[in-house]
Image (cartoon, rainbow, N blue to C red; front, side, top):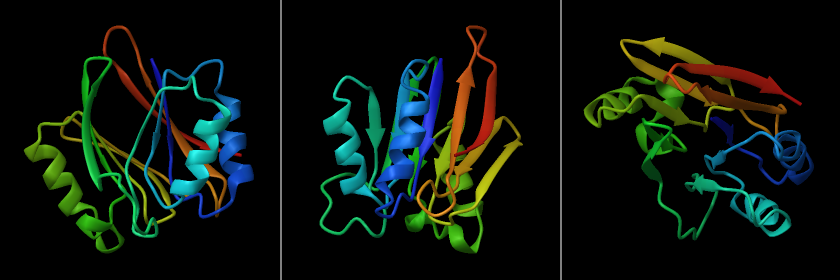
Length: 155
């Protein structure tokens, strides 16, 4: 199963579409981590058949979307947020602690615009970077056996 993780498009709709379209034939789920709510609305309008989850970012003013979410996908618990409620620009410990409290397998966040992946004590950690600013995004592959691979991608 493949998840495409996108964040921080910041009105660069072209790069967001490039990343989404690159995986139309192999993504099972898209997760958008905020700061570009209107941009992602355009993607959904263009591709209403894709499966997606999303949260709002600190720049998504007046959003009706939550700032954090937890889902089960491919047998894994995934916790995600844009990251600003956990002050990720000053370190990742708060969001990691929340993911551990929730007993998540994977934690996802954006906000810093910097790609980051790590495996720490049973927790897979990913910041896909900024698709709008840097052309960065992430892919998570989960095998039928439950193995997880975090992949940094770039347009």
